[in-house]
Amino acid sequence: MATPLKSPSGLVLAGGRSARFGSDKALALVDGRPMIRQVFETLAGIAQPVFVSVGDAATTYDLPARHVADRYPGCGPLGGIHAGLLASPAEWMLVVPCDMPDLDAASLKKLLKARTADGDAVVAVDPAGRPVPVVACYHRRALARIEARLAGPDLSLHGLLDLLDVVTVRLNERALRNINTPADAGV
Image (cartoon, rainbow, N blue to C red; front, side, top):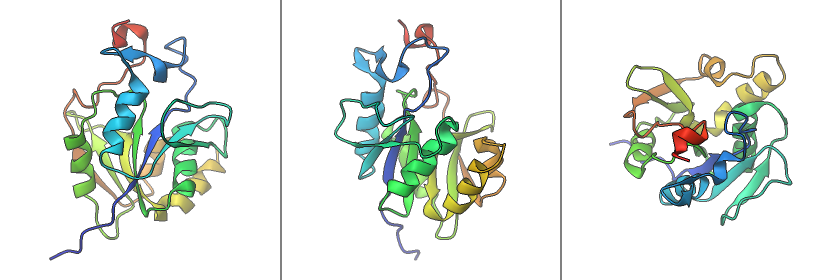
């Protein structure tokens, strides 16, 4: 029988520019509540501690979480995951974006259950089989490869996945619903 893997920390990615949204989409109300709060509460029920990745140290959200600023500003989610892994006391970190308010605990637990003792990441895939690397669980051992990518021109998470030992887990379309515009949020 395999030894259960230790509990993960959590990271809410909230460092984006929200360019298509027109304002800070993390604060957009969905079902009467800020998206970031919904995502945070779901994650906090599974992972501890939970961090919030922000693009710069001046940005904070009213959440009981430590905010971590990108050490490599302007590098997108890769920079946020890097900052989260550096701050995390846990070997594994469950990562979710602030703009997927329908992510549920059952979906996130599926990711955690798929971790392996020697794997680098467990990544959600949508019903069409496309990876969604911002909904994933990353092991600390991926940090060196993340740092190498941050030093180069290719900052894509999809490119990072090519360098890691990855397990994929199919999640339903509703859980992976992404809010990019006010219309997506019903605003």
